Structure formats: C-alpha cells, structure tokens
Image (cartoon, rainbow, N blue to C red; front, side, top):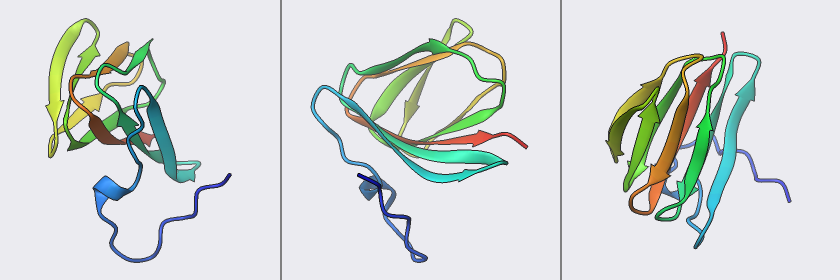
Length: 108
C-alpha cells in the first residue's frame, strides 16, 4: 500500500505518521538525489540500532522524547529540538516516551 504524497498545503507534523504499539513506523515524505525526508513514530522503548551513514542528517523532534547516542555520547531529544547526526559517526536512538521525529538526510 503506497502512502499518498503530501498535499501542497500546510500539514500538522504530528499527523505525518501514526504511533503503533510496540513498533517503529516510518513514512518517506521526500526522496531525491539530494537527500530524503522521512517521518518516524516510535513507541516507548522502541529503537534504531547503532549504525552510521555516509551523509549528515538532522533529527527534528516532533512529539515526546528519545535518547540519541552519537559516537558513545547520549543526547536527549525532545519535541521542538534539532540534533545533527554527523556523517560516518555511529548513532542509535531509543524512545523514552512515544516519540515522533522527522529525519532529514542531506546527500548533496
């Protein structure tokens, strides 16, 4: 099932992706050669395991809180905050409450 594209009008960030119990849910909002924009929803305790990416990325907190670890240093990200994930540095995320974020991956 394909997700419909975003309309050319304002949309509440919190409505971009729905929380699901015991799950991580994502929705790609933009995908181009220059990068991607993806909305994520994490139930409490859900996580993305440690990994790295060859590009910088921005985590934009929409709702709730999560702990994001970058190269062994933990950062608490809350709604309304932005955190940069540097290229080629390991990072991981664990939701401490139900958490929604927008991830902007910059490739060019």
